Image 1: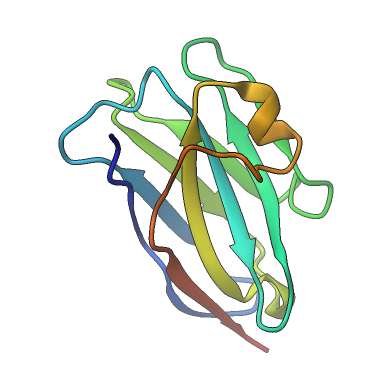
Image 2: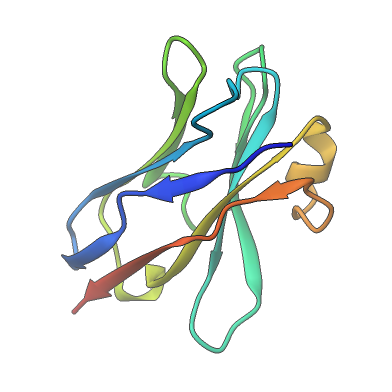
Length: 125
Protein backbone atom coordinates (compact mmCIF):
# COMPACT_ATOMS: atom_id res chain seq x y z
CA UNK A 1 0.00 0.00 0.00
CA UNK A 2 1.39 3.38 -1.01
CA UNK A 3 1.66 6.41 1.24
CA UNK A 4 2.09 9.29 -1.13
CA UNK A 5 3.40 12.62 0.04
CA UNK A 6 3.39 15.86 -1.90
CA UNK A 7 5.74 18.76 -1.28
CA UNK A 8 6.78 21.98 -2.93
CA UNK A 9 3.66 24.05 -2.59
CA UNK A 10 3.67 27.60 -1.36
CA UNK A 11 2.91 31.20 -2.16
CA UNK A 12 4.12 32.58 -5.46
CA UNK A 13 3.36 35.65 -7.53
CA UNK A 14 1.62 35.38 -10.86
CA UNK A 15 4.12 34.50 -13.55
CA UNK A 16 6.30 32.58 -11.14
CA UNK A 17 7.17 28.91 -10.94
CA UNK A 18 6.95 26.07 -8.49
CA UNK A 19 8.00 22.44 -8.65
CA UNK A 20 5.88 19.92 -6.81
CA UNK A 21 7.18 16.52 -5.80
CA UNK A 22 5.36 13.27 -5.11
CA UNK A 23 7.11 10.47 -3.29
CA UNK A 24 6.50 7.36 -1.23
CA UNK A 25 9.35 6.95 1.22
CA UNK A 26 9.06 3.16 1.28
CA UNK A 27 8.09 2.18 -2.24
CA UNK A 28 9.41 3.09 -5.68
CA UNK A 29 6.77 4.67 -7.87
CA UNK A 30 8.25 3.42 -11.11
CA UNK A 31 5.60 0.72 -11.48
CA UNK A 32 2.70 3.11 -11.06
CA UNK A 33 0.88 5.60 -13.19
CA UNK A 34 1.03 8.87 -11.29
CA UNK A 35 -1.36 11.73 -11.74
CA UNK A 36 -1.47 15.29 -10.46
CA UNK A 37 -4.82 16.76 -9.52
CA UNK A 38 -5.98 20.11 -8.23
CA UNK A 39 -8.89 21.30 -6.18
CA UNK A 40 -9.45 25.02 -6.31
CA UNK A 41 -11.47 26.77 -3.60
CA UNK A 42 -15.14 26.07 -4.09
CA UNK A 43 -14.56 23.85 -7.11
CA UNK A 44 -14.43 20.16 -7.85
CA UNK A 45 -11.17 18.33 -8.13
CA UNK A 46 -9.72 18.27 -11.64
CA UNK A 47 -7.06 16.18 -13.30
CA UNK A 48 -4.00 18.05 -14.54
CA UNK A 49 -1.49 15.52 -15.80
CA UNK A 50 -0.59 11.84 -15.83
CA UNK A 51 2.63 9.95 -16.45
CA UNK A 52 2.90 6.28 -17.20
CA UNK A 53 4.93 3.85 -15.16
CA UNK A 54 7.57 2.67 -17.62
CA UNK A 55 7.19 4.22 -21.03
CA UNK A 56 7.29 8.01 -21.25
CA UNK A 57 3.62 8.62 -21.89
CA UNK A 58 2.15 11.81 -20.50
CA UNK A 59 -1.15 13.62 -20.70
CA UNK A 60 -2.12 17.16 -19.77
CA UNK A 61 -5.25 19.15 -19.20
CA UNK A 62 -5.51 21.71 -21.99
CA UNK A 63 -5.32 24.68 -19.63
CA UNK A 64 -1.92 23.65 -18.28
CA UNK A 65 -0.22 21.73 -21.08
CA UNK A 66 1.95 24.63 -22.23
CA UNK A 67 2.92 25.62 -18.69
CA UNK A 68 3.18 22.44 -16.61
CA UNK A 69 5.52 19.50 -17.11
CA UNK A 70 5.24 16.12 -15.41
CA UNK A 71 8.34 13.99 -15.07
CA UNK A 72 10.04 11.29 -13.05
CA UNK A 73 13.53 11.17 -11.62
CA UNK A 74 15.90 8.60 -13.13
CA UNK A 75 15.17 6.03 -10.45
CA UNK A 76 11.46 6.56 -10.85
CA UNK A 77 11.03 7.17 -7.15
CA UNK A 78 9.84 10.73 -7.39
CA UNK A 79 7.34 12.33 -9.73
CA UNK A 80 7.50 16.05 -10.32
CA UNK A 81 5.13 18.67 -11.60
CA UNK A 82 7.02 21.69 -12.84
CA UNK A 83 4.64 24.62 -12.99
CA UNK A 84 5.64 27.75 -14.89
CA UNK A 85 3.83 30.97 -15.72
CA UNK A 86 1.51 30.45 -12.80
CA UNK A 87 -1.80 32.28 -12.74
CA UNK A 88 -4.09 33.16 -9.84
CA UNK A 89 -6.55 30.57 -11.15
CA UNK A 90 -3.91 27.89 -10.52
CA UNK A 91 -4.47 28.39 -6.79
CA UNK A 92 -5.62 25.27 -5.02
CA UNK A 93 -4.61 22.13 -3.23
CA UNK A 94 -2.54 19.88 -5.43
CA UNK A 95 -2.67 16.12 -4.99
CA UNK A 96 -0.73 13.28 -6.48
CA UNK A 97 -2.32 9.90 -6.88
CA UNK A 98 -1.34 6.48 -8.15
CA UNK A 99 -2.87 3.65 -10.12
CA UNK A 100 -1.70 0.80 -12.33
CA UNK A 101 -4.08 1.78 -15.12
CA UNK A 102 -3.22 4.74 -17.32
CA UNK A 103 -6.79 5.06 -18.55
CA UNK A 104 -8.02 5.64 -15.01
CA UNK A 105 -5.74 8.63 -14.64
CA UNK A 106 -6.31 9.98 -18.13
CA UNK A 107 -10.09 9.81 -17.74
CA UNK A 108 -10.14 12.08 -14.72
CA UNK A 109 -8.74 10.01 -11.90
CA UNK A 110 -11.93 9.24 -10.01
CA UNK A 111 -10.77 5.68 -9.40
CA UNK A 112 -7.13 6.26 -8.54
CA UNK A 113 -5.96 3.73 -5.99
CA UNK A 114 -3.82 5.88 -3.71
CA UNK A 115 -3.88 9.58 -2.86
CA UNK A 116 -1.58 11.94 -1.06
CA UNK A 117 -2.83 14.52 1.42
CA UNK A 118 -2.11 17.45 -0.85
CA UNK A 119 0.03 20.56 -0.90
CA UNK A 120 -1.35 24.09 -1.11
CA UNK A 121 -0.37 26.36 -3.97
CA UNK A 122 -1.37 30.00 -3.76
CA UNK A 123 -0.73 32.31 -6.68
CA UNK A 124 -1.11 36.00 -5.93
CA UNK A 125 -2.00 38.56 -8.56
